[in-house]
Image 1: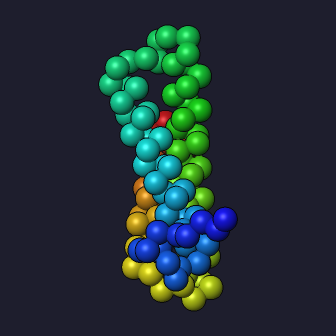
Image 2: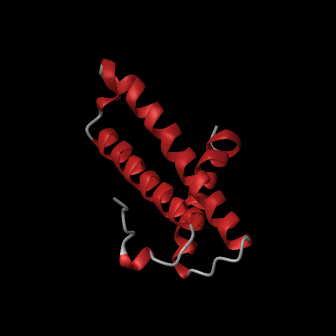
Length: 104
């Protein structure tokens, strides 16, 4: 039994779809971190490891999605929706580099 891709994804490469999937994961995880920060769960036992782990995974997924989008653009994929993973990856890189060097 073969699985058919969604009609709006048909005709696009696996790398381009991976870029969109990783950017969706990044948005979901960063949204989860924002929600958990509003509820102030960092003071609990499980929140003390969940929030930093989610931040690392979200930033990694965002930057990985941007890398996959750039690689698929370099392979010749022409899809306007690939700008979304690049923007999300740029935001994640800005947050990561800003946290490392600017907002000490």
